[in-house]
Length: 113
Length: 115
Image (cartoon, rainbow over the protein chains, first blue to last red):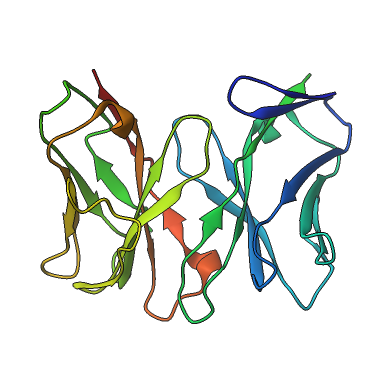
């Protein structure tokens, strides 16, 4: 289930389940979004991106959905594996013409074997 | 291809002391970023360089933080004097010139603890 811990919301799933991680972004003018995975002791790693002219994009085992009406992003991970355990961040590009990102607060995904 | 290198990986200092972090971006990457990541939060951009010029330092606390990239390659981020609230992981990232945001590669970070 999903719970709010001391620092991060946490999603706990069983191996093989599908996971859905949600993110609310702040600026309706944002036109580009990225999902990152961050493992303990490492920097964020790119997973998948989506532009604001799309509402869905699929990668390998991952799908990103964008709902601009409610400023909401979700990351779906199919057949979740223990190696997917990490903190997941969404990031938005607020400044067109500047290559800068604003990150959300993150969700910890815990996958049990 | 080697990734973004950062050192040291860990640093513990007392408040009011000074500290410096070093970043070596991916070879040939023109754009370099420093982020601050406080425990439980997403990274926050402190400063962005393109070659040796500053593109964006609007969120850098300039009274105590400074950064330089004199030759357009390596970069140093300094805090002087440090405060307790500076305890965080400091991440460096780089992209190629004209690179897209999805080509931004992060280093492992330097974990700073201020006592």
